[in-house]
Image (cartoon, rainbow, N blue to C red; front, side, top):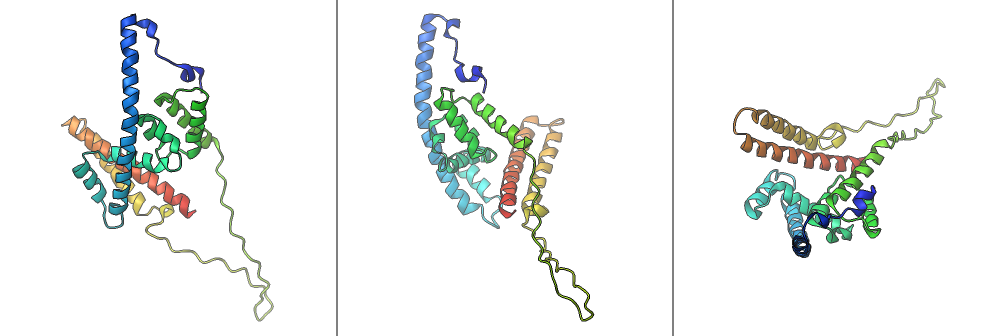
Length: 244
């Protein structure tokens, strides 16, 4: 990480002494309330997580989103951010000590635990826990992952057969039976992948309409559809890793 991120501070020499004193007091006020805000956000995340368990099961498509928007006043994306932060903080308690923006950023499903631990080590060495520092850490780990070669999956060993038929001709080894493709198998493009494609299709349609009429309303619809697609992709990837 660059030295400018580790040591960056606001240059109070740009303002007069009276303004400097007021700004320092105001920054302290923000930091004090930020701690209370993060604590409240984690409690919100706990409630959202429990509601997700109740409403995100099979046959309840859309019920969780409806409950969030109608009963809590939160957007679906904000609800997922605090849900992820609460659930991730169980494994990485250090998230509770950061600002809400940094905590939600690091708690995203695509961020590995190693990135959070690395960020914590940087903070111990004097790096300020800013959004810029968190983004730099996340990007660095993504670059490392993208450069790692994909290891091919080893083929299952096939037992050699010494059996012969009635004429003494060797019988070839028995091949393992192919498993039927399941509708829920993420590798075969199951239901989750189909939902993802549908959300992306809707987003593209909304974005196309932005050029014509009601740009503000359509823009909000596009963002919601893209957010749904992003969540489905993350869930699809987790399912794929689990079944490999």
